[in-house]
Length: 386
Image (cartoon, rainbow, N blue to C red; front, side, top):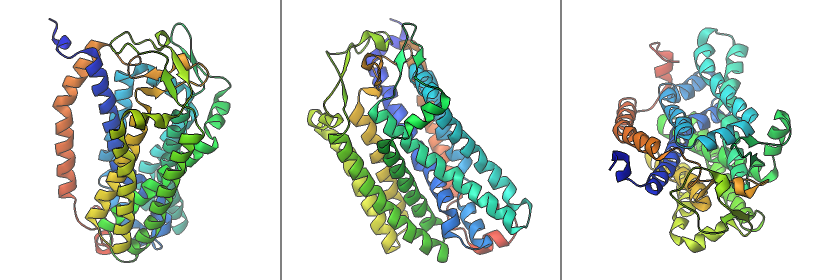
């Protein structure tokens, strides 16, 4: 028996679907508070010293946090190549805007303190705001489009085709439900950034972050509930017309998919998945209460629970669909027909088993070394502060 056949194809596909979810959740949990802090910067810090304090809470860790974004993109490229091709071709301008915002962020970190002028520093502060708020919003918009299905079809050669030009594709992404999902994402990560600032700062910055974070957390819960209701009564789901072949070739056109019913029927079929939205609501509620009460570490952990629950709820609700098609449901990408080969998934899983624990250990060590509050004395006393 060939080595990779010790794990069957179906199991490997499920394993990589789970790993993709872990990587996306890891990105939201880590770089999510970086984006939230950026979105909060102009509002929680009113003096140059306060803004330097806020920037220094994420300055030493944001680059490491972006590793999860790179790993997620790499996993999509290697484990789910049809998903990479279809999503990036249809969401090209949106992805470009996200990357531009993420590129602006390190530039702002490096250039903000190169000159003393207030106008110069304020401009870079707003660049940091854009580098946090824009990706947070667009990632949520992307989730909204995934839940509704994307307007693509596949040729017999499995080439993706979208109607309209590049600008039209971008405008089509901005429908009301997707914008609601974007607002939920922005509110959730803003609250997460506030929870991080409550741990890392003190004084007026912390007080303002707690106030804004409380409002953002309440907005996230209201928007998340509204999105769930909208999903239940206003958006059609997708389903297989007959039982799919779970270990067959990766060709979406070999399956027959029908549209109708509700995505939330998954909760009747698999009641245990209700733990994900329950965790999202419970975690955000605990985070809001923690912000109001002035608690620190427990508030951050509760916010992480909310994000993990919200991200998981999308994947569990849609399973086994990854990116449905509204133009041709049979072209929809699913766990069973959009993966790499059996051997590729096996080799990648072996590499992940070796290197993922190392990444986690290193990340834990970095946070342990850098733990503690950032004070005004830290940023005015010279040294290596941003």
